[in-house]
Length: 239
Image (tube, rainbow, N blue to C red; front, side, top):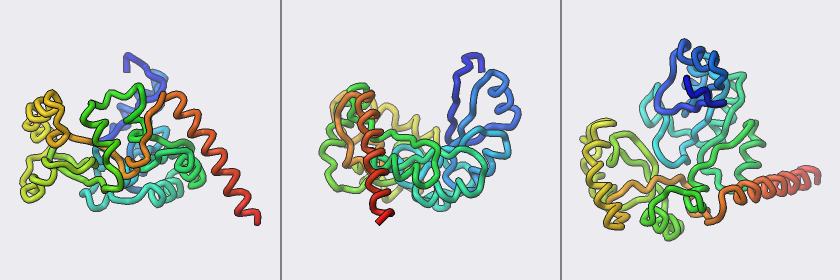
């Protein structure tokens, strides 16, 4: 609150109405992550200014907080549309958006904006480690997977040895943040050893489309691509 950022975005849980009001008093807009219509409505009820609709395709940790993981596995296309119809707030589409075509698709679904994460993992400004970056460039068409193995909370990433070997006992993994603390030393050692098989390689389903480059130039290129995709769609619809 004292930092008074223009926007504060939250995931994993939900603020109270009093906490949202405190941020508003500091001039900060509040965006809440939702993986279901119920979660979006909960954020609307406490006074959020916008909703980030985190689709099933998104990389990293799932932001669900009202239901079990199974109920949160709604794709970005359906979730963006459903939340847009359910709450009278700006919606930010997130999950699987990797280029201008995805940007155009999100806006066509009624989103006010899109949120991209995996698309930046190979950018010049990324903080991703070298083994993480190499795994992204070599992933090919292999699917990403959800796992609790690293942190005790479901997250999507590139499959590796640790995830595979933990699958048989994954149901017994302690909840976050306990498991996150237990694997901390392992992940640190693996990262130091340049070993991608024992670190979390968070990435969304569109990771195969990740490209290197300057982040600012990538954003400009995606916006041009979005306009081109929109123009192409208009031509098709107008036929």
